Image (cartoon, rainbow over all chains, first blue to last red; front, side):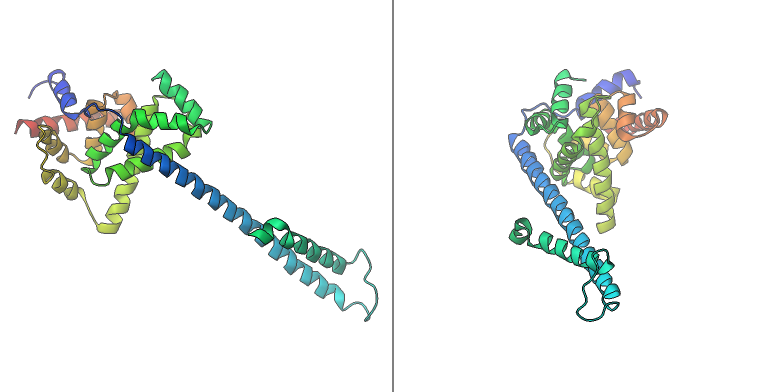
Length: 109
Length: 170
C-alpha cells in the first residue's frame, strides 16, 4: 500500500466537494425557514406569557373566593365588613381580576 | 479563520439576518456536500436547512474560537447523528440503507468509486474522512467538530484511510 503522503492528496481530490456558485434557491429556502422559525418562537413566547397571566388570574380568583368564604360567615347579615379583613382582600382580588380580564388587549384576543 | 466570516458572524449574533444570509451563501456548498455524503443523499438538503436554522438560533453563542465553518460543521454532525437516531427509531434502519442508496445512485461521475468506498466506512470514519481529506480540516479541528479526543480521531482517520485505499484499489 502507498504511504500517507501519496494517498492523502488522492483521497482529498476524490472527496473534496466540487466548486460551484452559491445555490440561491437553497439560500432563499433557508431565509424562509428562518422567518418561519422566528414567527413560531414569537408565537410560543406569547402563548406562554398568556398562559402565565391566565394562571395568575385563576389563582387570584380562587384565593379571592377562599378569603370571602372564610370571612363571610363571621358577620351578621347587613353588617359592614371592616377594611382590614381577609374578605376585603378577596373583593380587591376580584376587582383586580376584573380589570385585567376586561382590559382592551385581553378583550381583543 | 476568515476575517469576513468572523465579521459576518458577529453581525449575525447581533440579529442581522442579512449577515447570516451571507454566511449561508458562503458555507452552504460545504455543509450540503458533507451531509449529502454522510446520508447518501437522502434528506441531506432538509437536514442542511435545519442546520442553518439552528445556527441562526444559536448565532449569539458563537464566540469566535475556531473557524465559523468548523462551528457549522459541528452543528451539521450533531444534527446528522440526531436525525439518524430518530430515523433508526422510526424505521429500524441501519448502515445497510446507506450502502444500498450509494450502490443504486447510478452517478456517471468517476467519483462514484469514492462514494462506494465511503459506503464501506462506518459513520464516524466517513465523517472523519470527509472532514480531514475532503474539507481539509486539521486533525485537531476535526476532533473538535466531532467532539472526540485527538488520539481517537487520529485512529479513526487512519482506519478510514486504509479502508478507502483498499476499496479504491479493488
